[in-house]
Image (cartoon, rainbow, N blue to C red):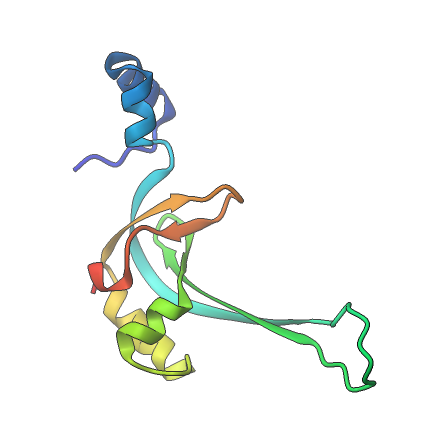
Length: 127
């Protein structure tokens, strides 16, 4: 399997196949990489909405992603993690277990419309 990250090579391939084949393959946004480790970010943002109660708390956001050897950070769907490991919460121990399971595994990913990298397929495809 080839790693299609060279845009000139993709352009040449697209010209030879024609534009419709290029759109179907969408090689420019499909990538492949080897997982170095998995980590999780947790951050809080102050609640900006008006609320009738004075008890307004910051909103908690989380993101679990695989860091690849090439430096890319690939988002892993947290619902997919919970489903695969049959857990209701993602803990440090679970992230550590996931990191051990994905370490040195090749994964395929793509760039979404926001410029973020996302895992292509389900977690069970790679473990």
